[in-house]
Length: 140
Image (cartoon, rainbow, N blue to C red):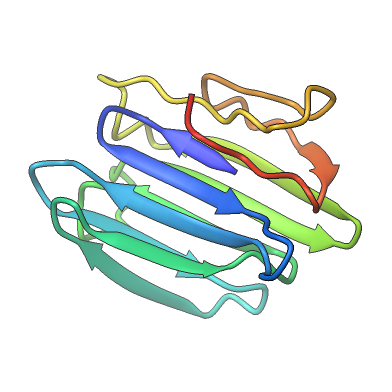
């Protein structure tokens, strides 16, 4: 899956020899903070500097990656862009939402799969999208 703004890319690639991967790349001039949450609610914060990259396998259920420009992720006023997903082979379920505003509102983004029958979005819509887990998502 790909999430792009002028500053952020969130990409999952499915290859024949490897599992799907969620990858976040940043081109922001300031740090970007990722809040990783697993299905049990355990969280971990990762800081990405300009041109930084973070990746994790696209597996499991009830996971999310919150992306913000503020290190105080849990403050109620911190704008967050949240990519949440669950993988239940052969289907991947995903959504993109804003919480307390969009930290990247001055940029646009798109999620565009390689299969026409899979959904594309160009703004956080909080809708649950599905596609089979053998789809590659790339930048537009």
